[in-house]
Amino acid sequence: MEQYVKYLRKSRFDRDYAELSIEETLKRHEAILDKMANDRGYCIAKTYYEVVSGESIASRPEIQKMLEEVSAGLYAGVLVVDVERLARGNGADQAYISQVFQFSGTKIITPMKVYDPSDEYDEEYFEFGLFMSRREYKTINRRLIRGRDSSASEGKYLGSIAPYGYERSKLKQEKGYTLAVHPAEGPVVQTIFALYLDHKGTKSIANYLNDRDIPTRHGGLWTYSTISQIVANPIYMGKIRRGWSRQIKSMENGAVKRRIKRSRDMNSYSLYDGLHPALVSEEDFRRAQDIRTGKRPEAKVRDEFTLQNPFAGILYCSVCGKRIGRTTSSAKRNTPPRLRCVNGRNCHNQSAYFEVVEKEIISALRSWLKGYRVKLDTAGYADDIQEARRKLQKLEQEQKKLSTQMDNACDLVEQGVYTLEVFRERRTKLTLAMEDIQEKKARLEALLTRLEASRSADANLIPQTEELLASYDEMTNEERNALLKEIVNSIQYYKGDDGRIVIDLYPRLPELR
Image (cartoon, rainbow, N blue to C red; front, side, top):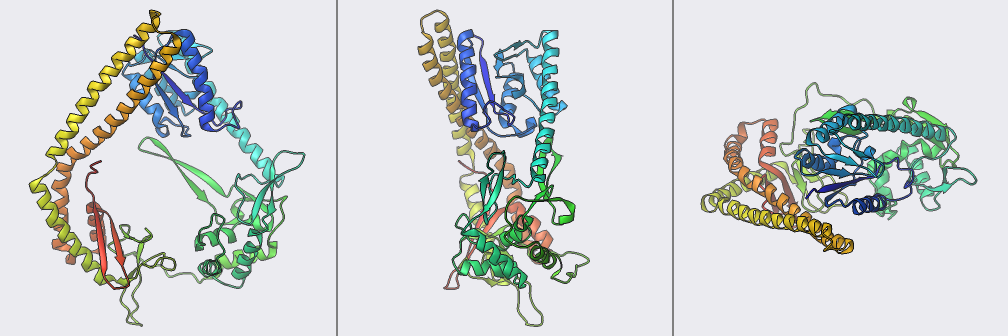
């Protein structure tokens, strides 16, 4: 019995469902495909829901799974509302999708047309459709950018969330939004600028607001970075900025990676007069920028950076989860370095001398290594591996049984034994059961892989720990840090009022769940 699969994905250019959520749009699209499947008698084995947004295949996990199964020839066809759902990415993605369907002989089925990859004309028509969808994507994208640039030049606010101090306000008798001063937040912004112009630092201003129980918009504590963002935003002098935040794309391991680059210099992006009222004058705002960029003398830069903290990037506070940092020692004051939580003002975890904590960590590593050796000698992972394989074999048997039941259900509806209503109910139950088994299999297979790999991992983990403990005193901080990161995921630090230091290690062991 031939089986088919549904693939559902919302495009951000869906004009008909622009106001609907992703879930609502996919639900409407699924209703279209279900009606088509019932009318044509297709037996649907699986449905893929793509809820992430991404131009390339590499950023869309569901289509990757589907294409892998299509390539294996598991399905007679894939149902989509239109071919654009499969690929609007670059030419390489489109060529790959075209080849997968062509080599596997899988049909692409839409409400308007069925594309048969074995037919030369259908193949050309399908490839042309992908090309045109990509062209339409770029055209619409350019049009959107031009529209946003035009709206910014008219002084309209483009964001979906108003910055602190404002609330979004719909423009009357025209499209777009502007900003209105928030009655509670607006005065706080003016206070921040007043303190900053009085040469108070961002951390000092954050402490000032926290000490007076003035919450952020979401009820949290103020931080110096939040204050810095407010002071640097020209929205508060009545301007709209455009082009200050850019998306930089790069290729990493075949996937398109995106990162946001924000400009700190107002001369590098466009500023437009906004329709909203200013909270500070332009003169005061520019004075604040002069303070922000030039209030400190240029720091002396070392010719060569030397890592001072061997626990950098792995030592964290067990109270608040923030990073534990190392203070610099002072020869003039004769003060040795300490380790403390970077959230010290709001966290009650006590600081301690660096050397004391260092000795406690080394001692904890020795104790862990001794216990871990005992565990491996007495138990190991043989029993866990055997149990995982047994469960996996049982799931595979259940999966075959459900697949046979699905085939029987399709045969019975063709013979007229099942009505369409009974068939749909039966198919839904079987599909859910198959998906549940597939998820359990995936978890078990991942666990089995980790358990089997752990044998070789143990062969490295123990010698690495032994090397660190034996040569710690002779190593540089860079060497210590590199080796520690291969041994542990993180180290948790706590020191209470009684002065006792507690160290918890989280070694790089396989997850057993």
